[in-house]
Structure formats: C-alpha cells, structure tokens
Image 1 (cartoon, rainbow, N blue to C red):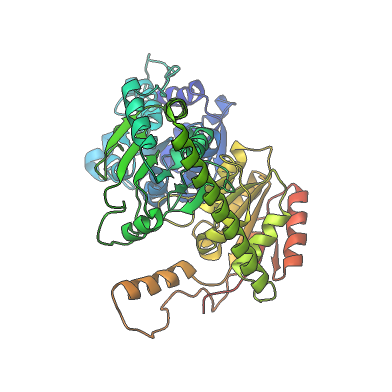
Image 2: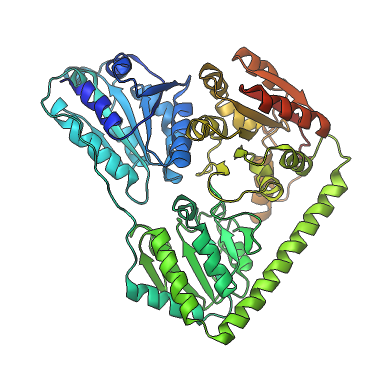
Length: 554
C-alpha cells in the first residue's frame, strides 16, 4: 500500500466523518484519492483559517477529532491565527499540510519551508512523516496526543513523495482509551474537609466542566455549600444553565477586579480551566487575603500552574466531582447545612434583582434607533425556537446575548477562545455538521465577520442551513472600549477621536457579499423586521444572512 492510503485509512479507522480543507498542489495525493474512501466527506473552504475554525468547532460540538488538510507553507501560515484559537479552546484536532518532495529539500523549492517549526508554537505536537513506514504510527499517536487532556491540535507534515512510497505497515486505530480516572480518595477527603470549613466558598468553572458534562455535579456542590459560581472571562460553552440562581456571570479581566468579584470569599475552588486569562495587568492577587485555594483538573499540566494552591487534585472531571459532592453531602453538619441554605437564598435574591435591572434597562431603550444591542438580543431571544443552537461572536454584545438567551447547558451555545476574531462564521459550519438536527443561528459582529466572510460560500456550497446574523454598528467597538480602558489605566488625558476604528466610507455591504456567494440576505433596522427575517430564514432550510443595523459607540 502507499503512504497516502495509510493516512486516509487511519482517518477511517479513527471514525473520521469530515475532512476540512483548502487544497493545493502538495495535497494532491490525499485530495485526488478521497473518492476511494466514501465514508470521508471533504468540506471545502476558500481560506485556510475557515477550515481550521470549522474543524475546531466541529470537534467541540461533536466530541470527535477535527481533521484539517492545508496547503504547504503559505496555507499553514494563513491558518496560524485560527490554529492559535483552537489551541486555546483545547480542540482535539489533527492538522495536516502537504510538504514539498524531500528530494528537493536542499534546493529551496517553491513553497518549501520548515512546516514543523512554523506550527510548533500553536500545537501540542508537530512532526513530519519521513517515510511511508511511519504513517500508521504517527497518525495513531497524533489522535492520542490530540485527545490527551488538555486536548488540542496536532500538526503533521506530509511530503508529496512520501505519500507515494510503498509500505507494508497498515493503519491501526488507537483503541478504547479511558481518560477519566477517579481521583485519589484521600484527596477527595481533604478537599471536602476544606470546603466544609469555609464560611464563604466560591466556585469558578472552565470549559472542561461542559466538555465532561459535569455541570450537574457542579451545581449540586454549589447548592450543598451555598456557593456562587463564576465562569471564565471567555468561555466556549455554558457548563451549567445560565439561569441557575448560583451563576453570577463571568469573572473580570484583571486580578484586582477578580478579587473584588469574589468579595469576602474565604475559599475559592477552581474547576477545569487555565485560570485566569487576564487582559490587563493589575497589582495583587486575584484571591481575597487568606483564602483557601483549591483546584480540580484533568491533567497535571494545569494544576497549580499559575497560582500556589492550598490543595489540588487531578482526576476525571465527572467522577472526581461526583465523589466530592457525595463526600460533602455525607459530612455536612446541621449548622453547615443551614448556613448554606441561607447563602443559597441570598444568591436567589441577587439573581432576581439582576433580572429586574436587565428588564428595566431594556424597557428604557425600546424606542432608541438605531437599535441598541440589548434590544436586538432580547428580540432574537424571544424569536428563536427552543431547540436553537447559538454560535456567537458578538464581542461587545456577548454580555447582552448571554443575559437575554436561555441556555440549558453544553450544546446550546458555542463561542471562540483565545481573543482572536473571525471564529464565529467558520465555527457555525462545524457546529452545523456536528449537530445537523437542530437549527443553527450564528451571531457575529460586522468586523469579526469580515475576517472569515468566505465561510458563507462554504455554507452555500455544502447546503448547510445556518442563519448568519451580522451586527452592523460599522465600527470595531471593542477596540474603542479598550482605548478608553487604556487611557484610564495609564492616566492619559485625551480628547482625541478613535483612530482607524470605523468601518464605513464605504459601508460594508453584507447583503451584497452574501448574494455574491450564493446566499439570500436581508438588512433590517426594526425589531419587527428582525423577527420576520429570522422566521423566513429558519423556515427556508437554506443558509441565509440577516444584516442588523445597530447603535454604535459615540
């Protein structure tokens, strides 16, 4: 058999459904032979970043390994930004790129470069296949490493001549690998003891809670001890229902504000994340003075990586949390139970008060035009079907979106990690392929959408029924807000206008761009128009685009 057949057979052996890609000459061995493997569907993109973004979200939504086939050095270079985002999202992926014939290595061939070195900073493992005999073992190892906690992308370079070499070593699956062991019993006892001795415990959750479907255990623990739950500042999933009375929202963007949010907490339990991803520097610790700091992770890599702990444990997320909940519930005294119930009552009151504030704010802006973000999100939240999946890159609109919509937990909501923009539109492609039986609505800022606008063509080409909504305030609003923060933090007195952050002269024509890629679009400026357009789009069974004119930052 040939090297290319081992690569493709390895994908089949590991249950691959889709190969996301943008092909070039060095990818001919794989692309030209895909038809011999009918269980593999090729999802064609017009830019490598779109392929990576779609595969990353597909991996998150399906629980399978995302597979991407890129072109040699320029193609890999185009993909690096989105590959960084996939790394931050812990998306299990194998990214391949064709490489020039190794016999040309010393002759500086066209498009030739050190692909392994290019990819290495943004993947877990970067390797080049040097002989066809290595294909099976490298692919098996790539699947394993991509899925070992914390999961993430792997890169494999495939020289064109190696793909045409003969080998007697065939593809082999990785086998059933069980990666969720229970935690050490002594560690569970220690954590339970610390938690039960706290008077003001706080829980912070990362995306691993959602991926492990451990939200039920987290909420059971929070209710048993009367703890508020905070989420990471940027999170790809909702690990628990966003209307749960204990969920306080997202932690802030610097250590001082994080500590303020924790208030008088005397114990902070961090679960399943890279805590904390700050945006701005501030002096001091994110933890209240004297607080007990606990952490639960699925890999030693994250445990105590950024902060010293009182105690930490490595174990499968769901079995560890389940054991911890049982230990806490069994050991609670009547006094601890009563104190926890009182804290639960206060958290319920805080949630109700926040809902009333939100409603008052919404009532105040209903007549404002162009429509404010809060009105747009409330209108959408009321109009979408109950089984909708939201893929969002609303950026400055995210707080309103996550307040107005109801998400029951994992699978209802997907967002980008890492801070790079342009993830929403490609991400919706991957989510739709992973969850084809639910309606997909992608909500993106106009600036973000332009980074990956060709994702619309892929949706049309593959007939993916996604409703794309662009929020057109015709500016990079998040950067204007960050300019304000920058000036304030560094005490810069300025009345200068925001430089180079407006997206007009000319205005971006999203309806026209969509039409050019085979998608029907409509621009709206009123809530009633938005509801009508959304209904039409969802009923069409086709990809559609709705461009919503919204209020900008003055």
